[in-house]
Length: 266
Image (tube, rainbow, N blue to C red; front, side):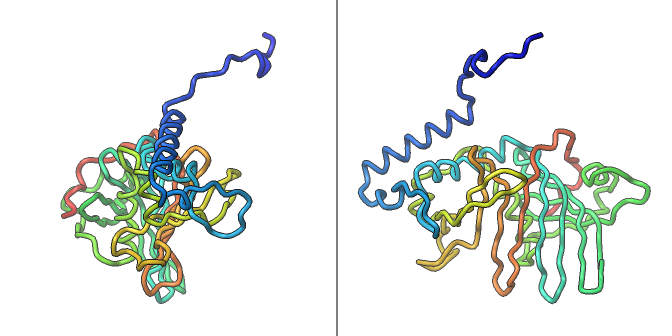
């Protein structure tokens, strides 16, 4: 069979994600024209070396990133957090934003090596820890099916970096896009561009939630978003810790089936 050239292939109609992006950009542009205060925040800037307010396109992609994450569920996720004193924790697992549930394997390390490890489950209300079941292989979500309900140690979230990181993860996905105009008005800023896994990502300081950061200070959250509005990485600065917690998203995991049993985390 002869190979078709690009010119032989009819142009496909825009997909739902692309149509949403166009719609959001139009919404922002209309809002800019209607509100003089938004003109500076959404002015297009190119080849600017330092941080600056987000543009129309950037605000639209940032606004879509949480919806895109929701629609990609279940997604692979890795959390690394510093507990202070040379102690760090790493969680590798999967999260489903339709149920706001996650399952993973955690490992705690200190200056002299591993300190603890096991399974962790979490949802919007809290988390549960359990030893890895003997003789059970496979991914964490599969191992969690072998842990009886009474085998979990559930608790509500605390200010601990592990808890804060897991709580952040379940909040990142949303079933609708954010309001791009409000993102810009709340202090979202473009910080730079990085190449992750061979793909360009814009780095953004998130909007400042009321009370989360003093006026004039940057949000504690930083987002890495690609040209299609896919969220690849989020970091969160923690008070008193020099190393921020980092959440990495590895894409959709079609094989994952999160168990029902462990979700008594309240």
